[in-house]
Every structure is written in C-alpha cells, then in structure tokens.
Image (cartoon, rainbow, N blue to C red; front, side, top):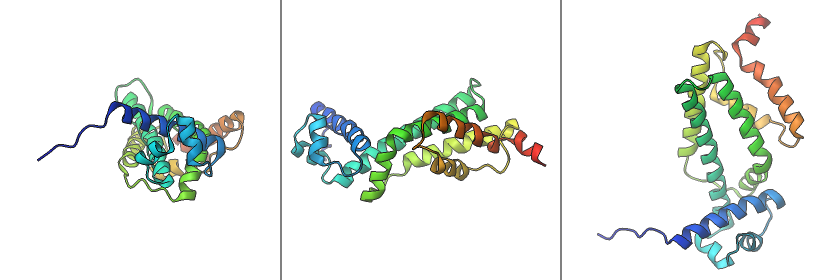
Length: 192
C-alpha cells in the first residue's frame, strides 16, 4: 500500500497565498470578484488557483472554513483562560462576542459570498468546536452566577446575526454595551 505524498512546500505556500488573497479580494470587492483578480493578488497563475480550487465555490468554501476555524480557536482560547483561572466567563464571553463582531466587519463580504455562491464546507468540526467552547463559557458563567440561566449558544449566535457590522466602531461598541446586560443574571434579577 502506498502512502499519499505530502504536498510540496511551494504548493502549500501557493494555497495559503490564494486563500489570503481570496479573503482580501472578496472583502474589498464583494462576492463578484473574479478568479483572475484573486490569482493576480496572490501572485499565482489562474491555472495554479484552479489546481487548488476547481471552482470559485470551492475557493469560497475554503475561505469560510478558515474563518470558522479562527473563530473556533478564539472560543477555545477563551474557555481555556476560564479553566486556568486567568479569565472570568462573562468577560471572556463578551470579549469573544466583540472580537467575532469586529472580525465580521472585515469578513462580512466573505460570508455574503458564501451565501451567494452556495459554498458549503461540508466539514462542521470547527463549527462544533466553537459551539462546544461557547457552551462551556456559558455554563461556567452560569455556575459563577454571572450569566442568566436561560442563555444558550443559540442566543449568542442570534447576537452575532444582529450585530451592526455595517456601522462605525463606536456604534458596534455601543451595541455590545447594550446587549451584554441581557446575558447577565444581575440585570435580569433587577427587572423582577
């Protein structure tokens, strides 16, 4: 039985350059940016791009997959800080929420492109990692008495979907300041 060869170093570099350029070009020009422009921005030939990504949908799916992996890493890092005692769950959850919203400001076009082109990553491992870490943050915050007992992962995703990513930074900061009390147990107790 023969083993699959590891990709050549130049192929790995080219793939990374293509993914970086695709994210930047889609963010700058929207989902209709052409593969020629993406290849030029990456400094590779169009044929090289197509060897790595046979269709534009495949390319968009890969860009979205990388974005979701970064979000999952961030959520797991936040949970690790809570687990080792260097972070408080509510602070880590709101910090995570703020970071994802800020990332979405620049990656918003990538998500729109994925929806427009029907890019489906087919790999939900990173989505599951993110959801599991967010659930862990919520549980830890509830155990601390800081996060209201009815807050769920779906609530956090709802907040992501309603974030004012098309507004200036000051408006996004104000949005976060307004929604954070809705997560906390103290704010809800004072309403009773």
